[in-house]
Length: 258
Length: 182
Image 1 (cartoon, helix red, strand yellow):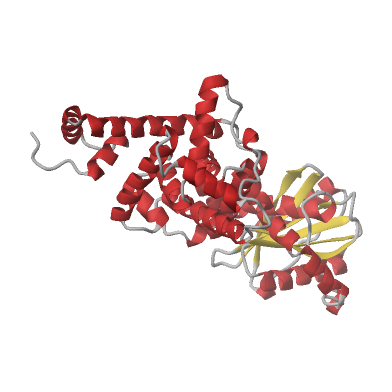
Image 2 (cartoon, chains in turn brown, red):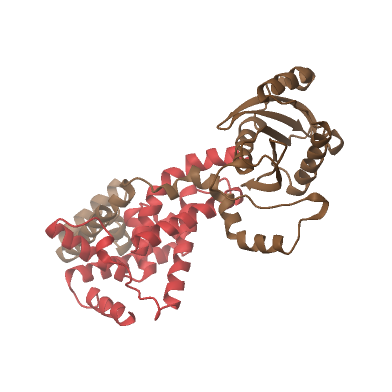
C-alpha cells in the first residue's frame, strides 16, 4: 500500500483536504499507525476548522456600503478629484485657466445638483447609448428637423444642434433621455472610426449659468457648462484635450444660435 | 475596454469575491476599520488597474495579490512607526462578534494566537486554510516558491498549535514579545 513515503507535505495536504482519494487513504492508514503524528494532524484539522468558523461571520455579514463595487466605480474619479481638490484650488487662485473665457474647475461629488448632476446624467447616458451599435439614437440625423422640433417642445426652449463635422465628428441623431431633473436631449456624434461623443442638454434650476467644468468617471471624460438656463455636458471616451476643443466649439455655436 | 464593459466584467468577476477579501483582511489586520479600509484601497486599485490585467489571469489570485501587497505595506508602515503607535492599539473586544462563554474564550485565544504569528505565516495560513486557495495560487499571491509555501505552512500550523496548547516557543513567548514592543 505504502508505495511512497508520507512526507510532511502530504500531511499538510491531508489537513487541507487537497489529496486525491487514494493518497488520502494512504495518509489515514499512516496516521492510524503513528499516533503521535495523528494527534498533531488532528490538532491542525481542528485549528483549520476553528479559523474558518471564527472568520466566517465577516464574510457572511452584508458588505458595507463603502465597499459596494458599483458605487465605488461611480465615485472613483471624484475621489481622485477630491484628493487633488486643494491643489486644484491653489492653481485656480493663481489664475490659471482664465484664457479665452475658460474656467476649468473640478466637480465634487456631493452635493449632486446643477451641472455636477448634469455631468453625471450625461456620463450615464453616454455609457448606455454610445455603446449601442444597433440603435444608439431614436431619431436619425436624416430627420434632424423632426428631432429639433420634438426636443424644443419638450424642453420648452428652441434647441440647436451644434455641427462638429469640422472637428471630425459627424452628427448621427438623438433622443430624449429621462433625468431626475426632467427631460434631457441627447445628441450623438461619431468620428466614423467607432469613437462617439454625446451632448446632453436640459433646463437648469441650479447653475443657470456656469463656466465650463471638466468631469470624468474612469476613462470617460466630459465638459459641462450652462448658459441662460440650459445646461450642457459633452461626454466621450476620447482625450480630454480633444473633447475640450469640441466642447468649446459646441458652446460657441450654441451661444450664436440660442 | 469601454466603461460599461469594465463595470460588467468587474461586477461578475470581482464583486462575488468581496466578502472573502474582507475576511482575509480581517484575519490579517486584527482591527476591523483598518481591514475594511484596506479592502477599499484594494478595490479602488482594482478598478483603476482592471484594464492592465491579463485576460487569462485568474481574477481571484489577481485581487488577492493586490490586497496582500497593500496589507504588507500597511503593516510595514505600522511597524516603522512602532514606538508612536502601539501594535495592540485595537480594542480586542471589538474585533469579533462577542463570545458566548467558553466557545468565545477559545475563539479569543485562537485569534490572539493567529495575530501572534509572524505576518508571512499568518497570511499563508489564511489563504490556504480559510480562503481555500490552492498551494500554487497561494505561491502566486505571495510570490514565493511552492516549496516555501509547504514549509511555511507547516511552521505556521505548528506554531499556532503550540500557542493554543500552551507548549513552549509558542503564544506565550510571542505575546510577551508583542507587549514589549508596545
